[in-house]
Length: 546
Image 1 (cartoon, rainbow, N blue to C red):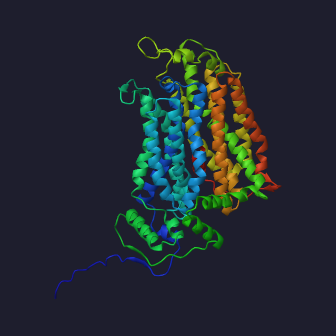
Image 2 (image 1 turned 135 degrees about the vertical axis):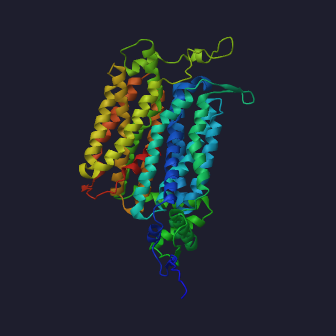
Image 3 (image 1 turned 90 degrees about the vertical axis):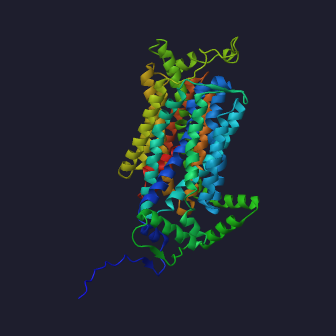
């Protein structure tokens, strides 16, 4: 009798003959290396937006001699990236909905990096202003679209977890910003580039370092496809199935049975919306595209939604006016305070420190006999305290958003908004009178944490608008917020050297005013919002820098 060898059956392929929903198909891919790679890339893109827009605040105090910058010009430079974002965010959002998410994200990442590199070689105020504007113009493409791109690779049950993971990566980027600035800017090297007639110093390298995440993410996205949900909405079913199968192979490591899908179940979509989307995708006329963009935006400013839109836009404008506008001069002001402390001054207000340490423009523009700017006038380094307090501020933000995400459904949005607006506003006004530098700095840090309200206002927006207007409402309100960044930075730039106290009064009073009026956003026409939110505080946290 011949010996028989028992053979174990090979795993059979998983085959679905009947159509399945795309959400179900994405769940079949499991959650693995493919998802983690996308989450890491998305979080790094959000961090890149932060580095590109707020990193300039560390450059301004040490670049004033190289670029011959006045305080007003520093204000313009602080805001110009946000101006670029404002001018393009609506356009990128529209193109992402009609042409594709990856189609927008990929080229804008590379273009933002090129613009950043060019800005590091500029020799005067106007050139760096132009290049920083284009940096904001292009980086807006990825910041406005990455949420949709990441979320559409996941089923609804997993999308919040994916966004939370990306926001964790972003939070690490927030904390690393002052550390990166300290490690690069405070080096003691320089060399001359005769062809460009510039002295290349560490602050120029820091700007390139801030742009590197955009380049790295752009290269990484070359290996990833377009959003499967976008492709499926365009009728490209087979391409969508191939993406799902690729995700499954990555997540399972190529082991186990193959996933075979015969077809995907078509999802219902309003016929009018579908026709409008197809027209937008196929349209070649600029005027027609502008008309379609207006048709998507106009309902927010009509009927019952007009008052709600106005309120959330005013609130976001007020928040960004301080959280970003005042932040852009945070390292500079801290550096001035440290300069006085080094001279033995123990008691001084923030504004007295600002007035005492003003740069003499006549000395700034008149070099010595050797052709160099006087060293006692120029700052080639930032004091370590500027980095330390910036690190503390970013850590507070990372932890604070996590706490708000945990308590918002229990405490409610209205009490949180009233507390943050009121507390931060009062601290902003008190800064004018405090003559203990360390205490004043801590009150300054508290003033800047008003950015917590951005996430809460976005959560209110989700409740106040229906699904078909929700994304556009958030987009429009954030555009007004970024406008607040531009206005705030320029107000500080114009008033800081002559009316320093007024800048803190404006910030404090505007926040208190927002706190007194924010109940209108939650009680529009007597309607009290009671709907439970899927808050995802980490997701909203990233909106502060977009």
